[in-house]
Image (cartoon, rainbow over all chains, first blue to last red; front, side):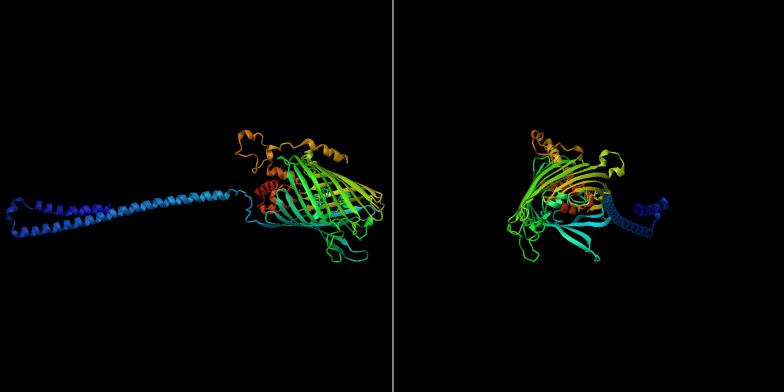
Length: 454
Length: 104
């Protein structure tokens, strides 16, 4: 703008000069102007005209420059507006990103492609104090029982469980012995939604206790008498198992069918005392790979599971197994189990099993055995007393009966309680009253146990 | 023995509909594309959370989903599917519930 004003002044200056000269000359002197003066004046006018022309050209150039400047100014203003818009957009994006980071990311299922294999350790550990009548009370490490899981893909799982315990060495010798036993080791192949093939050292589905008897699952420190005495805990072989839904309400039909080596004879004979329910694993002590008798064992379990609503359910099952047991294969061992479990809410559980077994022998003929147990647990949280110490307590009781078929009868009454420090850390205390025809059995004992499931 | 008989009496009781307040987001109930006339006849299917409560409580108290990561639950769930005889579809619903609420 200043340049335009200055240019106008320069254009007016020659005209003002000429006018001033004309006014300055007296009118009477016109006739008296000499040629020299006229020429001088003419020359001056010509110079002034040239100056005016030059200034006009300069003015045009300045006008052009000014227009160019205006154009550049418009372009710069447009760029500035664009830059300001970009900055505004960036600020908005930044705010949106900050808000997104402040909010928790939505949880989505793990991508199948990124987690195809996984190794996992579960299990339980128990530490006990036991005081048996007529004996000194003692602390003992009852069990450390890890379970190792290795998943290979979506439908293959290898699982193995171990039990580690310690015991004093033989009398008059120092130190102690550590035992490290394989509880089970099996390869599971999920064939479809309703059937799984298992192979290896299997927990046998005779009743449910052998598969659900881990320390932190069982609310009483020791096993039911009949389960320990009459049933094999595991067997080496193969199994098909699964469940078929019965409607959409959660009812299931469960099945398990297995074929394992079966029981064996501890000394090869058919004498009743030699029956060995868990020792026939396919490899003999002399290194020979063989079943101890000619034919394998077969068995299975059928069950229905009826949930009334979450935490209210009933499960009923029947299971059986049959096998040769002596090396000559001349005697059969058979076992049958009826099992039931009832849950009425999260606070009340009742479960039990009835077990009957029979086996032939060389020396005592046919031996008929049976036993059963019923276990009740009630969590005091069901009383709604709003007392933390009470809410964490569960009262438990169990009745055991065992008839071994060899003349010994045992009845055992157990009462106790469980304090749940957490859902997986349990403090258990039980007192057992034992009534046995075997005089070597104690009449009562106290067991305290810390149990942790991990 | 009498206790077993008492338990057997409860068999015909059948199943009651689960409470509505235990329905998480992963329900597979119903089919949005099904004809309206047929929807009344379709029974509500159990959710992953309901199946989780039903099956865990059979043997032990329910563990918190946050105790394990999603990948760990996938392995543990395969173990429990075999051990507790859980059908595949139910196991997948339980796994989905556990992973959506897992400790990452």
